[in-house]
Image (cartoon, rainbow, N blue to C red; front, top):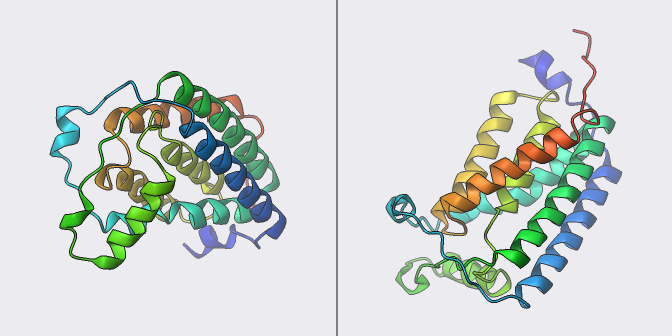
Length: 206
C-alpha cells in the first residue's frame, strides 16, 4: 500500500491551473449553449423512476471539481497530456450532442427538502445548469478520464470508489438519466482510446 501511494509524487500546480482554466472554459461554453436550445427529447426510463432523489448527493456531485483538479495535479506528464486532450475531445463531442439532441431532464421539487442549505445550493445550481443538456453526461465522462489519469499513480480502490460515487450522484441528484450516464461512459471510453498512446505510463521501479 505504501509503495502504491509513493508513486503519487508531488503535485504540479501548472497542470492543476491549466485544468481549472479548461473547466471554466468548458462550463462557459456549456452555459451559453443551453440558452440557445429548446429541449426536444425525454429519455427517462422506468429504471430512472426507481432511483430515489437523494439531496445529500450534492456533496458527492460537487466533489467532481476538486477530484478533476487533483487528477490533473498528480497525473504524470503523459497522463496529463492524455487527460487534457481527451477532455477537450469530450467537450467538443458533448456540446455537439447538446446542440443536436437537447434533452429535458425532469427536476424534483425542492420545496419538500428539510435542509435549507441543500435547498439553496440545489436551487442555485439549477439556475445555472438548466434542465436541457443531459446527453451525454460530461460529469461522468470527465470523472472517468480523471480516474484514468490517476490509475497508475495512487491507490486504485480509492480512485475507483471516488469516481463511482461521483458518477452515481448524477443519478441520485436527478441531474442525469441512465441514458445520459451510459452515453458519458461510452464517450469516456472513446476519448480514452483516441488518446491511448498519450496516456501510456511508464512503470515505476519498485
